[in-house]
Length: 186
Ligand code: NI
Image 1 (spheres, rainbow, N blue to C red):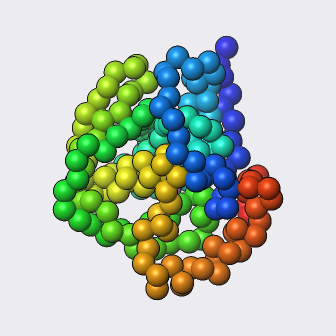
Image 2: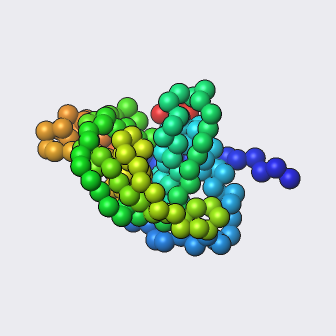
Image 3: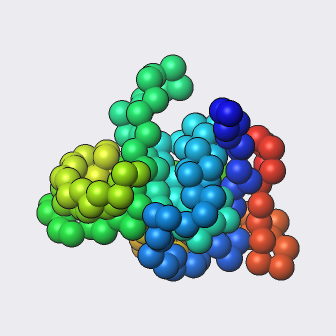
């Protein structure tokens, strides 16, 4: 039987899941294979180039990225990384970043230009790879999520003040530590 993946509800700024530091994930966790399909499906449904599991209310230490995808008609090539670790960093680069959990907020963020990282792939093998530019930035952004860090946390006081009204508006949607985006629109 073919599994029909679901569009998982996304957690927005103000949701407690976004501030959680996720524990190591065991590959033999029951239900993990179905979750991974939902997870990938949700990244594309939200037109993202990356997603971390706590953004969809999961405690799995896992990200998915697709840095080669420049528009929605491009061939999909998702890379799932379980327990990713950034092993080394080099140089610096600034990109304008956004986040599915922070709709309509964009800011220039300084990150490492080149990284070496390791992760467990879907076959259970530990991989070590290097990336630079946009791919390196996406991996750093998503790995931050797994430690409860958001891209806006890297901003200085003045840049943060500029987006404060948008952050407060998002935060105001939260109820009892939950801020869930249902459907496609805010
Ligand atoms: Ni994000």
